Amino acid sequence: MTTDNNRTEILALRHGQSTWNEAGKWQGHADPPLSEFGEHQAATAAQYIGQVDVIITSPLERAHRTAAIIGEIIGVGPVEVIEDLKERSVGQWEGLTRNEIEADWPGWIDDDRRPEGWEYDVDLQRRALKAFTEIGERYPGATVLVVAHGGVLIAMEKHLGVNEARIPNLHGRIFRWTGGRFEAGGELNLLPDDMRTGGRSKRY
Image 1 (cartoon, rainbow, N blue to C red):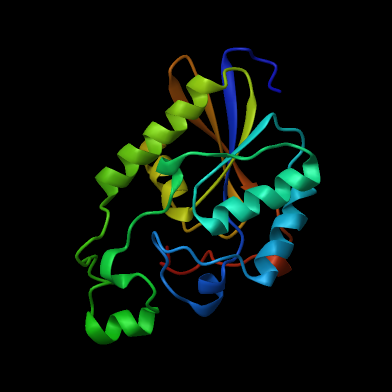
Image 2 (cartoon, rainbow, N blue to C red):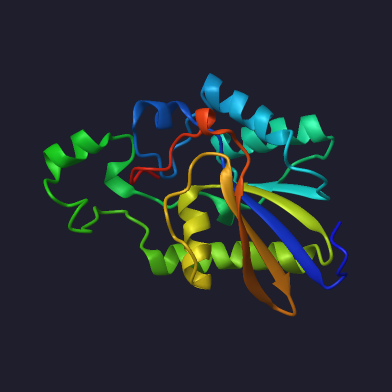
C-alpha cells in the first residue's frame, strides 16, 4: 500500500515470453500462450515484485497467465481483467514474422507504413489512458500491479513524454496517479540479464 492515500502507484509490466515471441511472430490481438521460458520468467519476477494490493491484467492469455503466476506466488488474487489493456491490433501482420512481412510488404516496416486493420498510435494511446485512468480512480491509495503489453506501455510512456524504447518481457515502468493526472516513475527491471527477452525488435 502506498503511504499517500490520494496516490495510486501502478507497477506496469509487459507479459512473459510467449510461444509467438519465441518464434518471432507479430501477435497483436492473437492469443498464443506463454512459452515454458515465459512461465519461468513470470515466476522469477514474482520474487522481486514486493507488496501489491491488487493485480490487473489484459484479457490475452500471455498477460493473464503471467499475472496469475505472479499472483499465486505472492498471494494476491483473484486477478482482475480490463479489456482495454490488450495489445495493439497489427491487422494483416498478425502471426507473421518480420521476414514474411518484408516479403509481402517490402520496406513497409522501416517506412512506418502499416497494413489494413492496424491500430494507430492515437487510438491505442486513447485506449491505454482510459484503462490506466480507470485503475487510478478505482484504487486510490493502492499499489497495483498491471500486466499488459509492450505497445500499451509504450503508449503511456509517449503520453507522458518518457523513454518509449522497446520493452523486454517482464520489464516496464511505474506510473503514479495523483489528483486526476499521471506522472512517470522509474523503469522496472525484474529479471537478470540472462532471462531478458523481447526488447530489441519491433514486435507486438
